[in-house]
Length: 602
Figure 1 (cartoon, one colour):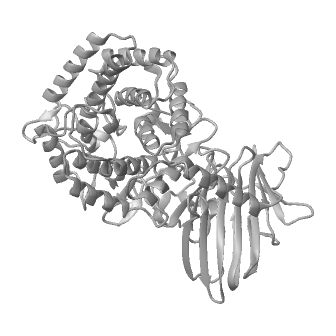
Figure 2 (cartoon, rainbow, N blue to C red):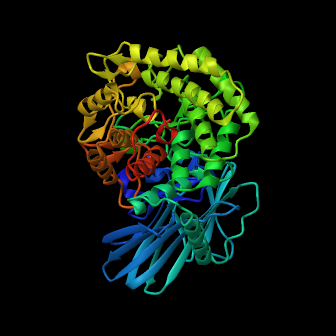
Figure 3 (cartoon, helix red, strand yellow):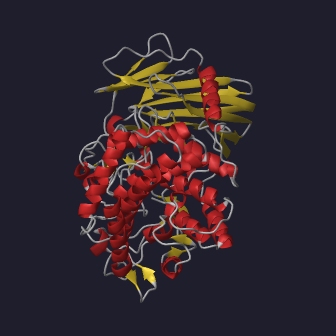
């Protein structure tokens, strides 16, 4: 059975990712990309679906940490007679994906066990395994994929698994290496000095971390969120995955299990804000370029999400051979929401473009032509219903947040013409901006609740309504904003944390409920700060920081009753919310003017 989600840590080479538990078991690994089929999938099933464990024979105390400023993990095991350190590192570079596990004796001597179960295609395929001639190690092959495992100790095969028992004494260091390659190619060259390669990777991460210009409070925690954001970036293209996992449940035992190993358009402006707050202009530029390439085509062809290289078709299937994390089924790969209609993404795209220009990011005249086409599309289609920000699988509706973000799209287009002097139908856009605004205020607001509502004609609340002030749709001191924030605090907060909405099958088309959404809770902290309630905002922010696991990682959601993390992990949306909220809370207080993109959530 898999560990609690918070018991895992992330490994990354900025191309692919692994999750390693505090017990020394790598239970999730996708090679060679974030969205590749996993070769270790015990996270979503059991040890028979693939894992790689290195641990003491007699478990004792365990402590772990990331090497400062890096995504390299150190786990220290203490047991009878000794203490040793396990360093897990995915090497950064241009070659084949390589995972190195270093075992180093610190005190006395320890007896350890290795268990390696390789199962390609999400735990379904048992590979052919053969020993490497003239050295300790194995080669595992199945179809197009192969893994090469080099070991400093003898390996034994039994019951379609690989085992080793070994001893490490103080001062000894043993390096285990795993390399992915295509099965039709020759065996790859092993790194001659794995320890030196780990040191090189540590230096690479530290050099990246030193580029941060974030100078606000909570710096160590924000640094970890920034490193996580970098770790979830696909280096060849600049695309950023929402999470490196699939089907970690929003409720334990439930069916709200989705594949998040893709890049969402919705994250664009959030992510740009976070990167620019910390001075990572190069990463912001690459993310912006990824966006421009991904949305190429006519506006009606724009997806809400893409593969990390810009792939458009993300066909969703279920994997019946996997039992699911904590029995949460089905396990899904792919995401059918890619084909949904979500009008808010045009607001996020236009917000990202406007923010990029204001921040001095390179911006071609050609892309302004694309943005104009997107704006014209919103002009023609803003009155239509959609599936909304939460990708409901129920009927299309006139979601208030979608209309607010349609307003944002038109607003940012108009302001770009005003501020940058670019060509556009300014008078028409100004007029339409006013009409959308009036429509939302009339049909998306309930005088009875003194709050905006989830969709036109409803009396339900939705955390996305916090973007009414965050997007600049209304100023923070507007009574309707205060009423909405108060209503969300009253009706959507449980145990101090924010729910996305109250799930109802007739709205989202799904059974069951879910945990509190961490990103939404950060939105509430930002909104409270905008309203001048800085003490309450800081209290919530620090409560949220307390939900991170011991190595500083957030998941998508938190289950207050079970008091544990749920949802895909680690979650970009949560870490971006953390960075932007920290910057907002520690910015110099200033009067709230009209709309300001620097305060935009979308």
